[in-house]
Length: 306
Ligand SMILES: NC(=O)c1ccc[n+]([C@@H]2O[C@H](COP(=O)([O-])OP(=O)(O)OC[C@H]3O[C@@H](n4cnc5c(N)ncnc54)[C@H](OP(=O)(O)O)[C@@H]3O)[C@@H](O)[C@H]2O)c1
Image 1 (cartoon, rainbow, N blue to C red):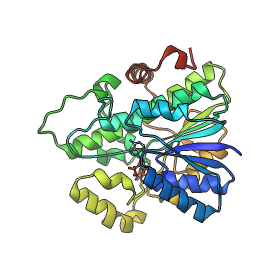
Image 2: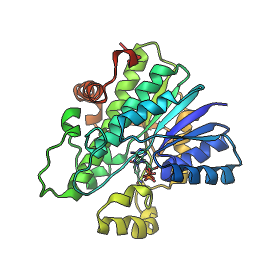
Image 3: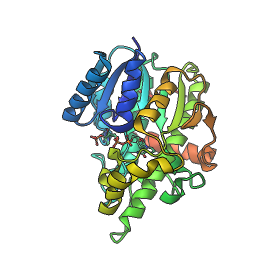
Image 4: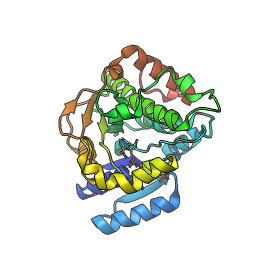
């Protein structure tokens, strides 16, 4: 039975994707930071699917050591990886255990290290999906979050804030920048796979649409939080590009089970679409990859590519 590892699978999109994969006969590993939430998610999955092929391993994307421990404890032959976990927050800057700005550390650097370590250890890993967002593109509905502000991984990780910053605005900028980076990651990873005899591995990015009411809103400012949990769920159906964790979870599961393409962006549909113009900027992509390598300390023996 083929196993798929899903980060942040205890709630929202990740949980729904796990459910659909189990229903399609796959085994899933819940890679979550909170053991109690993971156990509750596992029990609910067992009840709803009847599957016993669910395991849990602790993973905190805000700790480089946790990623290394996770991969060390991964045995068997994982077939799929879904880089789903993500955060957005609007408070004064927070940091990962390694001192990186939290949004960039969790959404980007954590998945960068995890994916490369897994590719380095397992030739069985053949399907990778990376969750991005329409918010990465100011021209396609993501405009309300503002523009991404990619500079270099070093500058995004080690920030120097004005204490009087508008945290709400800064939080949005950091979030959309992290979702642009998810595309740099997908596209560059695809090129490396193709040029290093790993063409059997397919990697694609995914926009799940607006999933109002998920845990993503839990670190927002009070007013935004109120809208996210109490107003938007009732109104979401009127918004273009809105979906539900269940519908998008099914689409995301198909990127593991049915896709035949690689290096593409899927946005709430079965056919690949174009992402923002900036996401194809090869100079920025190169800066992104090289900067991330340094920040996560990817060793020469851990690089599966030349
Ligand atoms: N909701 C939307 O409208 C929307 C739109 C576009 C894209 N997305 C993307 O979809 C993905 C899933 O989001 P969601 O809406 O389903 O929100 P969610 O329910 O909050 O799911 C996010 C998951 O990430 C986990 N997580 C956060 N920090 C982590 C860490 N340090 N280590 C490991 N896991 C961590 C959370 O765990 P805890 O429960 O322990 O916090 C949770 O399981 C995210 O990448 C998000 O950016 C969402």
